Length: 218
Image (cartoon, rainbow, N blue to C red; front, side):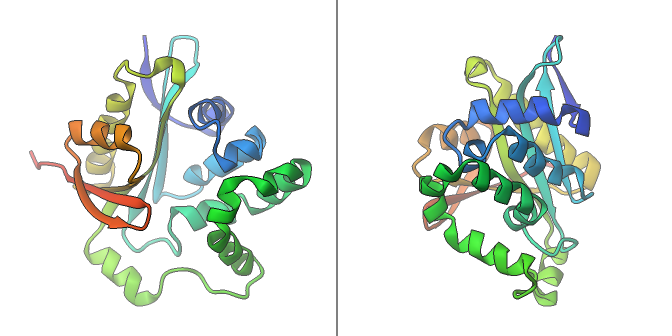
């Protein structure tokens, strides 16, 4: 029987394997499972983020989901937070997998990569200013950072299961009813899935569509 469990360090290898299956063409996957495991461990390094997964009776990870609490308590968002946390792992990945330098995501993410290199060297300050952090504290929300299901389990309702658990944790663990996410505007399949689960379309920012949901208070 499948069950939803909070991810621990002991589960990271299984969740990393699921990530590589769910996102086979992603830059993180190209850098190797070791890097993916390190990247995912960021969720376990702060109380302002969380990671959970669905596993079957054998302990195999079917799908997983990660979220971040945007309430002004963190200095950076999830992208820079993970990039800083897994910086040396990524460097190791590029050294051992040099062909990844030609991965299409490298060019697309180069501004973020360069910014995090400068941050790691201490040349650039952290992301959020005091004013930005104060604004987030006044209007907190929980952001859906990643959700993935292994291909062999697509179409069986695990995505909806993960979304419902994401909502439950936002409300019960953090007392926050405002949810948000960002998805590629061309990913129509994912957008329809979010809409079926009560999410609404928001602003279009570049290639990304912002979506939001307000969980009804009981």
